[in-house]
Amino acid sequence: MTITILLFAGLAERANQREIQLTLPEQATVRDLLQAVAEQHPALSPLLNSCFVSINHEYAAPDHIISANDEIALLPPVSGGEEPRFAITTEPLSADKLVSLVSNPHAGAILTFVGTVREFTHGQRTVYLSYEAYAPMAVEKMKQVAAEIEERWPGAQVAMQHRIGDLKIEEIAVIVAVATPHRNESFEAGRYAIERLKQIVPIWKKEMWEDGSEWKGHQQGPWNPLATYDGKVD
Image (tube, rainbow, N blue to C red; front, top):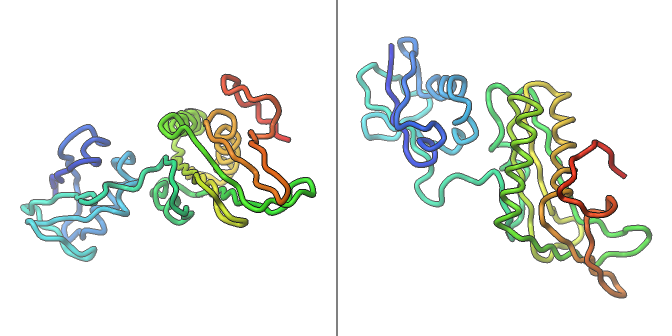
């Protein structure tokens, strides 16, 4: 059977249309429908975990059986919108959230990098770190990094979020999640993502020590955000 699915808000924007059509077998369920949407419209995949399906103006459970004459809509969250894949935030970060943003049926591997605040650097004890960012530009540069990754590793999906403000020892400062069809690509693309983030995203940290403080850069030599990434790290 062929069904039409209505799209709204961020879903319609991603699909660049207000409705899509799918062919499903008889007795297909809502769960089958979501799987088919993810496979046939990969641009919508990162949003599906936070969406609901409406059938004939009622929210439908995953095992609800679909009929050919049903009016079906795919609904993104009403309040607050979907979780952004790229963000500068003062709130605590969650690796699980970023994994859910990049997870999709075509991914065979999802790599996460979690950067935390360490206590000792070169023998000097850090009390806490204070992060600052030029937030609008930082988000745009995160998107640039993701676009570079998607060009180098087709099929990759990327999410990056960085926390700002004062962070205690062991708190999470940055998370990068990369989903790719194969595991080798996830390792390579994940390494590229964090090193490129350090290179071009305008974020600064101030190390607060027991006996003073200092603003620090990425510590990979002179800062040159116009340079390309050569794959070398200290």
